Length: 184
Image 1: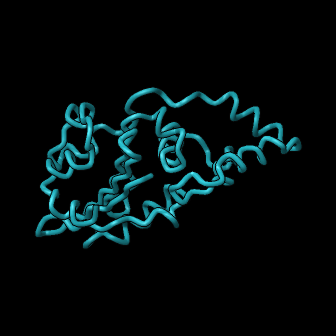
Image 2 (image 1 turned 180 degrees about the vertical axis):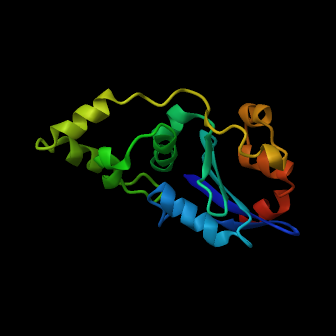
């Protein structure tokens, strides 16, 4: 089960909104969703957490490229939304991984076994399976831009040692606990 929320920075602090992941199939979709929540093209921080196993932070500032941090890349890479983030960080091309296209990305992981089995039965596309087999696995531990929240009060060191309720700790440091709890 995933929890996802958007925090949009405003003149008066932060505004939070529950992020519906049903329509998010790529980092571009997530970035577009964050930009739509922005107030005057200010900073938007998207949080995704999978039941305390891993969390991801995506920061979008106006039209700049998103900045991404994942707390445990190896764990995240085994989930639909986490693999979307880790693949971007590792420079993997989405077109090279047809397995992701066939997964049900609704946050429940339903249909994953069937999609993988169907993919493995495809014999006519050996190049993709060879490329995937040779791909470097996601590293165990953090991956990405550990400084993406530094100017907002969360140092790299703080981000790397967060344990337990990661999103709660981040929201507290950002001064957004009340607004985040309102959408939880």
